[in-house]
Amino acid sequence: METLLYTPISMEQLLKAKILGVFIPSYIITLFSFIAFGIIVNIGGFIHFGGFIFPDIKWLITILWISPAISLLSLIFTVMVSAKSKTFQEAQQVSGLLVVPVIVVLVAQMTGVLMLSNLVMFIAGTIFFILDYILIKRISSKFIPEKLI
Image 1 (tube, helix red, strand yellow):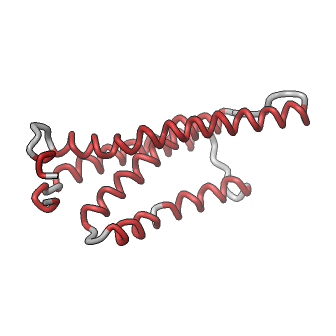
Image 2 (tube, helix red, strand yellow; image 1 turned 45 degrees about the vertical axis):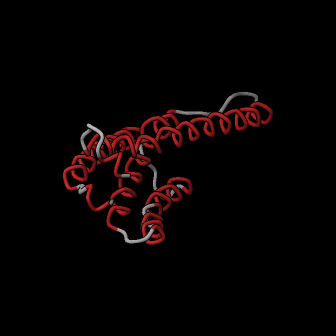
Image 3 (spheres, helix red, strand yellow; image 1 turned 180 degrees about the vertical axis):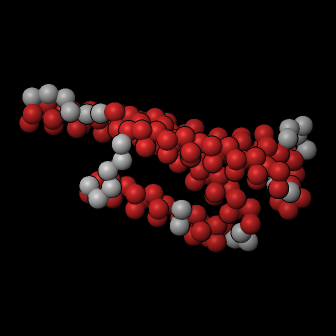
């Protein structure tokens, strides 16, 4: 870890690299899973309904706009929590709480209790991306590398 701190990059660049190093593979897996799900749903839809039924615009907004924004947000929160936690178990438990609001919204949307329009979904994704940017700036300015050693 000490050698990494001696590299001629800023703390913001180091944090961005740490976050992107986890985000990129996870988002690629998300995209491949979405494609596989789409193929399976369309095969079933074609057999039963005689046409393709997936994806619609809501799914595309979700997978291409909201999913990366929420994924980045959860990774940033995890980095923030792990910087303040004393053990990895503590960081993992606190980070697990971040999933609860996302699951509540997802279940509400799936059951029809909460119906979000395309515009609301796009605005929510934009808000998440803005929040991602603000939090990266905030934690990079408060990040103290000596605490890691």
